[in-house]
Image (cartoon, rainbow, N blue to C red; front, side):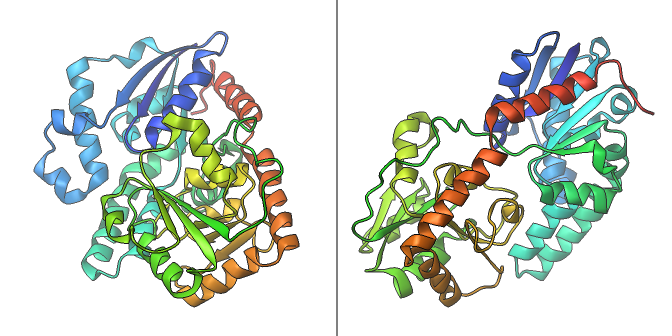
Length: 373
């Protein structure tokens, strides 16, 4: 089966596309061809004025359409299509209606725009988001019904396809981001002496609730906990002198052993993000056996279970509430160890690389020679 894979390397898409590329390249009888949307394309190709008005999805379509034409790809020689993003499907309506198609997504237009409105207090941005949602639903609603199978990163996203777009639940499979659990694992015999270490990982510090975290730490946690921040965000320079705060820059998956060690030597993961589908860092935290305290946003509820492996706080919860919950996780050592074990259990159930890859292969093979009009 010759399958044309239309993937994105923009932002988190780089990691996701590499994961699926590795699976497809090792499938017997499958010959994948890859066409990537890359970050540099946004400077190489001019974005139309109307696209700028309509927002980021329209800008992406404008750039991709120009690149597609420039490279002259023809879909007629392929047996199936695989999209890693719903945005790009808008340019392939006819092909999707006639060819077996698989799509992998983190979110839906309804959910994505809901997150935008949840984060902002601006009436203009809220109105613009409503307009964008109406436009996107008009573009994508019918397309979704012609896609043979949809892979979602969370139950949160699957529920939206079923509820908001009336997609058959059997045509949607949740495939959580996989981790190599032989590498991502808790540290054996972790020392329990000294202040507990709270870990935050993420760039785009403001959107991920970083300023909220700093206020929380300074008011309630300073002197009792250490706060370890892994981020390359420039705004962190103004927080470098806060006692008890350790800021680590320039480490990540390129230095995986050192990166994993930062999780393994922490005691809890703090995730106050203001807008997120499902942060990859949550899968890493669970794999390392960390209890998680997170804002209830996006798909966080898929992986953080209240009073089991951590706590989800309401979107509007204040820093006093966050402090009480962090204390509840960390001050009772028996409770802390139970939550740590439970995080690892969930990771083994949800993020197993072998099991997830087998499910993806099964779905890809099922597309061969099949199209239900």
